[in-house]
Structure formats: C-alpha cells, structure tokens
Length: 470
Image (cartoon, rainbow, N blue to C red; front, side, top):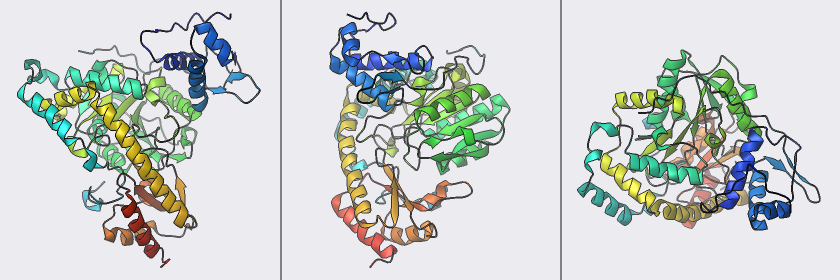
C-alpha cells in the first residue's frame, strides 16, 4: 500500500474527511509545495493510503477540479494545474493589537426587483420566540459599552457558519458586527484611505452603484477595472496603486459571473504587491443552484489582504439590519475603533437572538428551504426569457443569487426607456447601463426571489408590449 502523505493528518473525529483532504491539497498547491504538473495518485490509491472510502477521495478531487486546482481527463493522470504561487509576506508590518439615490430606487415590494429576498418566507414565529426570549433575559455582560463591535456569541456563531459554508479562516475577534454592508464598506474605505495616504480605489466595471457612491463619499477616486465572464481582470487595471479593491467574486454584481481561480490569484497578488485591502462583498453566496459553490476568496488569502463582508439582509430580511465584516488581523484595532467612532450598532437583543438562531440550526434549515425556492424561481425566469425573448435578450449567470443579468442583442436599444415602460406595471427591473462607468452595454437586471408562475406569466406579457411584440 502506498503510504499516506506525512503532511495529510486527518482528524477523523471532526468529520468532513473529503473537505479536510480538499483543503490540505489546495493549501499546498497554493503554496507551491505541489508544483504544476505534479502527478497525483489515483483516487483509489489515495483513498487506500489514507484509509478512507474511495468516494471520499473522489469528492475531494472533484472539488479541486471544479475550482481549477487540478486537471484530469478520461484515461489520463490527474495533475496539478499551472497556477501562480501564493506569496506569504504580509502587506504591512503592524502587530495584531486585538483587545444609489433613494428616489431612483424601485420600492422593496416591487416584483422582480434585484437583490431583494422573499420576505414573505421569513420565519416569523421562530424568530419572534428567539427575540422575545433574549429581550427578557439579556446577560449583564451584554449591557455595557464593551460590545461595540458585536457580542462574542454572535461573532462566534457567524464565524462557525461561514467557515463551514464559505471556507472563511479567522477567529471571532476579527468579526465586526454592523447594521449593513454599506456601513462596513464606509468604515473600511475611510480607514484604508487614511492609513495608506492614497485616494485610488479599484472597482469592478460594471459594479455595484451603492458601493461606488459610498467610496466616492469617503474621498476615493474610483478606477474602474473591466469585468468579463471570468470576473475582474486586474491585468487591465489602470492608474496608481489602490488603497482598496472592491469586488464581488462569488456572484459578480450585476453580471453573476464567478471569478476564476487564475483571476483570484492575480487579484490576491496585486493586493499583496501594492499593500492594498481587498473588500470581498459576498452578499448572496448562500444561494447557489446546480454546481457546488466556490469557496470565498478570503479562505485562500495567505497574505492577509482580504476583508470579507456578509449580510443577513439577503439571507433573512433587509429589516433585520445585521451584517458583518471579517477583517485581517493587522486591521482589527483600527477598524474596531472606526466602528466605535461611527456610533452605528445593532441592538444587543437582536444580536443575541440571532446568535441563538444560528447556533441552534435555524439558519441552516431556512437556507435549505430558500435555496430550493429560489432555484425554482430562477428556472422559471430563465425558461420564460429563453423561450420567449431569446432573439432579444442574452442571459448571463443564473447559477446563484437573487438576480439574473440579461443583455440586449440589439446594442442600439435603450434599456432605460424599455424598463421605464415595463416598471409602470409595478416591477422593479433595473437597467444594466446604470452599473457601468464610461462605455456601457445595455440590458435588464431581473430579481428572481418572487418569480411565482403567475408573476412570470404577467411579466412575459408586459415585456412583449414593451418590445413591441404585441
């Protein structure tokens, strides 16, 4: 029997053996310890050497292959893919001292508004029990000023959740609890602009208009970086070294593209080289349909250049007003101080209730239900658009998230005029041109969270009128 690699020591009590194998191989690939072209043993031999089922090794290999770390084809050996080697230097030498304009927006209740969850599916009864229980029995340690960055129970619960589902690597002290990702973006932008003495910020183009506004308000000079079907391409970035790089790598907003592994490594290397902070906005990656979702960028960051943002506004409801940032260790003290100075905070009883909600498995159960629901909604929307408007619209994405990007095949069409007409019927569609800086491509961004059969049928009829097909 081939001996098991000395560096791959499985913790059998911890479970998820396939995940342990995947992470061990991934990390050594990124560090260059398993070089490009290196031949891996067959899944049968590898499983035998580790004393695990072959299906466990197959699952780990399949995940590595789907994310681009290894290459394999029928009848050929499995080999390490050619990737850029990760650098280990920290971008800064600090110690770890842990101690859209509203009038333009469609209303939240508008059908097919992008980025808005189906709040009718919110678990009202369960949530109210947790909230009432914590309102009656808050612990003394939760009532002081020392919890300005979030109560420990919630920070730990959040980290337990995202380390399992998104591969985030951190400790609870790195988690900051905030009322919204916008608050986190503002705090991180102001902190990095002040710290670095730079004004340049790289941002995806097309990209999230609200983030663009927040960064501009903080004093940033936005340098748009082109995105395509592989995500942001930092090789095409222009301008001075950035203080901050804002990205949505898992589901690029608004196109839905997933940042490929070579592009991820190039982005990480650019940030390490320039001493920049990457702000990874993972706004709706809990919702993924079909293929297995790719882990967060933060999880493969070895130079501590990524701040990871998440929110419960998309997962549960916007009115909950709870989000979080997982910041690099060297930034914990400054970001925490900036959060305290800002005065923004989430009520303590809401934090405590949410911590219980997550820890007792309620969030996982809700996500399972909503993934099934949203997957059906996405299929309905895609089938309607491809079946009735394939000659007018080209689709982008559709594999996850709460929105679907489409592009006009006729580049001369005015997306704002078309959408203005359709939205008179109570929809919340958005023009793709609004997401660009400079030259743009026109199209329509659809929200899918409430795409029930009758709503999809009515939308199809209204689109036909707007396109002049009836």
